[in-house]
Image 1 (cartoon, rainbow, N blue to C red):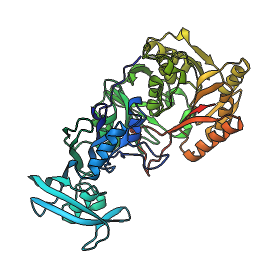
Image 2 (image 1 turned 120 degrees about the vertical axis):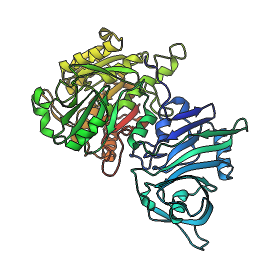
Image 3 (image 1 turned 180 degrees about the vertical axis):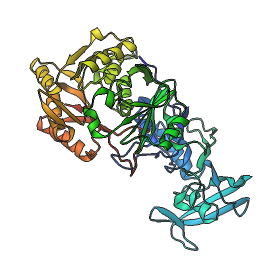
Image 4 (image 1 turned 90 degrees about the vertical axis):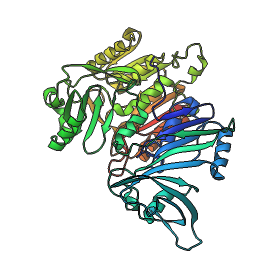
Length: 535
């Protein structure tokens, strides 16, 4: 089984504390139920030992730097008291394109919210008192570097005080800053009493304001030794790294600027794939990605994700072998951990420390729409016996090769070629039952047996049939990348299908797309996933 280690954002951990370096552009916590996970949720839902993490303080989405989370109720009480009583010493580093009026200054004002911004109330008693010390530490025009020491913990107080005193933070457009694509504010130093020993502890981390925001996010969550396939650019054009190669996806031809960007990433080769809807019906030669920069891949090659190996092939048409946005969900099969108090295989806890590398030992897993069997490989590596079901013999053979890449014997597992709806009925008639059923269908598909499948209309029917082969207490994984299907409707339709089948939800956990597929107003969420334990 793959060995999984801490993400790079973790700087320190003991039995009481978790200290992380939050990259810019990532929320401390999720702003809404179906929004992307903040760093808090992402960590809490990643490791069982982090299941009781508690937020002690927050950083703005645009601000990078040190965050401390408590791991026990005792640590939570101690740290909360220290922050409340202003016993925690905090230092931020910031850059401005304007010189401060003094090399050292103390700013005090009452802050009040005004729409998205906060403003100081001149001479007014209303609002919350905010006090900040500033000290100029580097005078290198056109950039001035300062240390800010907030003596209170008000929202945006450093940003407001810097702006209102003539040196707005570089990149902080909300408060008059210009210059770069991020807010150049970083929580660089934390000092407090350790909640268990009472001794003073200090954590320091220096900023890198010049690094690309998306690169800092990837550096926080991905270990190259463990994973070398991930999203680099998420927007109108999408760029993914697959080992030594890049794959760009866009509706039209690649522009000169986009080609230059691909060259700047220094990959061995870069390909481009057209994402217009009609491309899926074309021949392999017309649908496959085209080399636009560098050297060709020359056939199949191998990438790794969470320590697991997969075969990738840019010559096999529209699909290259894996969907990177399911990385965190595949990891849940490797760890048998979905979220706090929710395991993939409930009986896996009975295995105990004797077989720590096989948390799904004894589980029967059905992977429908298996494609190249990436989910199946993770389940099998965790000890499960897996049945992979797909309408394509080519992809099932590809899946067998993925098993072999990871030293798994395909002969010990089942690979079924055929229509999912037809085979769900057959399996139900045979009284087959599974501990885990995985549903990750395409948005649109067509087969001779069941006709057209459109996710937004036919998913409830799929859930109904899947429940007939799910054991009582089993786990149903339901996922869709139908971009126009709102998550509220996705969740509602699945819940209704379960209720109509006279089954009851015991546990549930909603998962959005991973952090390197960021969610914004211009690029809303498309991937929706529910993990459900069904009575």
